Length: 566
Image 1 (tube, one colour):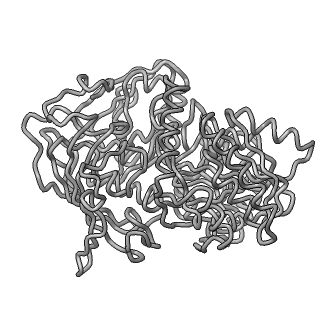
Image 2 (cartoon, helix red, strand yellow):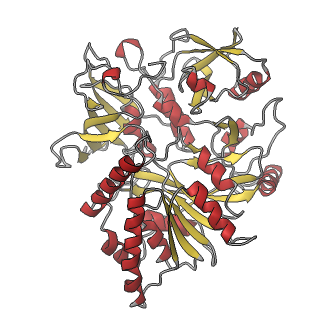
Image 3 (cartoon, helix red, strand yellow):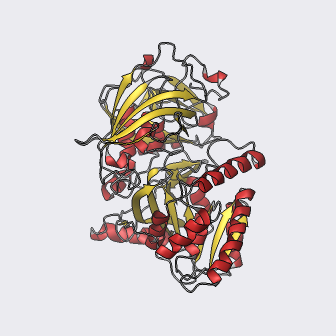
C-alpha cells in the first residue's frame, strides 16, 4: 500500500493483460517544423529564457513555496507524440496538459491530427500563461493559411488545475467524453515514485475511460473508493531534461471493471498483469504483495524514497554490498497516539534476511513531526521484537489493531546497495544493482553530506563501460567553465548517478557503474551517442553543497533547516 495524507492507496493494477510496450516514433514532420519555428529546440537559448521566466515568476508570485513544485522542463517532442499515440485518442475527447508552461505540448497535441473536442493547457505561473497566449495568437493565422496541418480548438487557462479541471469537466455536460491528460511528473513534488495527490484529484474528477500520461512516476488507485488506474502502456525513451525517462499511460476504470477483469484473469490463469484480490487482514485493506510481484503488476511501496534515504555507515564508510547491518545502531523508540501514523512500510531483502523498513513519510503526519525518516528499519512494536520472518503487510495490520498510544522502535538504515536493488525492482527492471566505489575519501572534517533538496555542484565524466571506454558527456565538455549544478532529488540526471551522489561530502569522489535501466535505458540516448542497453560509468566529484565549498561547513550555516534525525 501507499500512504498519502493518512489514506492508503494500492499500486496501479493492469487489467486485461500486461501493459503494452509502446514504440518510439518520430513526430510528424510538419508538426515538428511548426513547433521548432515557434519555440526552438529543448536545448535552445529560447528554452533557457523560458526557464528563467518560470523561475522569476515562481519567486515573485509564490515566494513561500519550497522544494521542486515549480521546476520547469520541456518534454521531448518525439517521446510525447509516441505516448499520445499509445493513449489511442478518439474523436470528441479532450486533451489537457497539466502544467502546460508556454503551451508547447498543447499546440503539439492540437496539431497532431486527432479530432479533439479541444486541447487545453493549465498553467499556474501567470507569465508562462501569458507567453502561451501570445504564441497562440501567432500560431492561428499561420495555420489558417496552410492546408498541410489543422489546429484543433485550443483553450489556455491560468490557475490551479485542481480547481479548473473539475469546472471544465462539469461544463461538458452530464456525460462528458473521456479526456487524455498529460502530466510531466518527473519533478512533481512527491516522495518516491508515486503520485498520491494527483491520483486522488484526477480519479475523482475525470470521466471513466480517461487516459492519464505520466513521466517517471506512477499513479495509484483508491483501495476504498470507486476508481482505479489501470496501467495500459509504458515507454522508455531519451528526453533532453533527464537524459532518459519512462512514460506511463494509465486508463481510469470503474472499480467493478478493474476487479472483475483481475478476478477473471486470475481464475483463467491468463493475463500477465491480472491479479486477484484476497480478504484483507483485520484493520487493513491490502492487495496481495506477493501476487502483485508475481504478476509483474508493480509494487506496493515507494522504493525510490528508500534509495534516496540511503545513508553511509558511521565514520563516512560506504556500506559494502551484502555486508550485515547493525540493527542496534541509531535505535530510537517513538510513541504514536494518532490512528493514522503517516508512514508506509516495505519488505526489504538484506544480507541478514528479510526486514521491514519505512519507505515513505507523509508530509505533516505524526511520523514527520516526531522525526521518523524514510529508510530506517522497524524492529519492535510495543517493546516486542519483530520476528525475522514477519512481512510488512502483517506489521501494518498489527499496528492498525494496536491500542493507542503505540510505541514503535526504529534502528539502522538501508545500505545503498539494498536501496538501489529495491528501486530497480520498482521499475519492473532486472534486479542487477549498480556498483559504487569511492575514489577519493571525504575530508576528516566533513560536516555536511548531500541529501534530497540540496543544491549541489558536481564535476563529472560519463563514459561507456564497453571496450571503447568512450567519453559521452562531462561537465568539461559542456563548456560552461564550472561544475554542473542541480537540485538533488529532482530527477535531472540519470537515476544511477542521482542515487550514487546521496550522502556525499564536499571534495569526495565516487565511481558509479550503472546498468542500462538506471542509466539511459533500453533505447540509449541519440543526442549523446549512447547505444541501446548500454552499461555506463560515471566518475563524479562533489564540488559544493548549497553553494558551500568548505567541507567543514555545518548544515545550519547554509540556510537549510536541520531534520530531527540529521
